[in-house]
Length: 133
Image 1: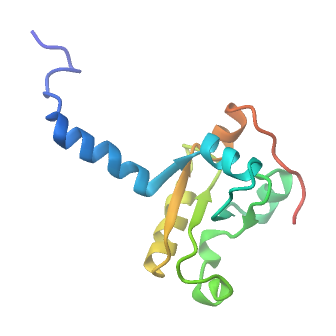
Image 2: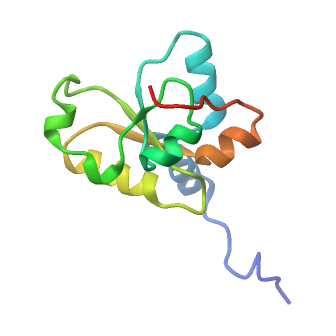
C-alpha cells in the first residue's frame, strides 16, 4: 500500500525541472536579497508592503515602505519601466507580498516575491532596521 506521499506519482524529471526552474522567475529568498544588498550588487527596488507602523518597528535595510494598496502608476513614475521590484511582507502567514506582486505585475512592472518575508529574514539571522526612512 502506497503512502500519502507516493500515492500520486512524482512528475517526470523534465516537467519537474521546468516547474522548479520557473519558480525562480517569481521568487527570491532572504539570503539572496541580503547578499545582493551587502555586496553592493542590489539591482532591484525592495518594497515592504506592510503598513507604516509595522515598517517603522523594523524593516529590511534599504526597503521602501509601499503598502500594496498604494501601488499606483503615479507612485512608480520615477522608476524606469524595466526596474525589477522585490516585495515582502510579514512572512508566510501573510499574503500582502503576493497582493503587491500582483499589483505591480498588473501595472506591467517586473516583480519577484521575497519568500519568507520579515519572518524569513529574522530566521536567517539578519537584522532589521527600525524607524522610517
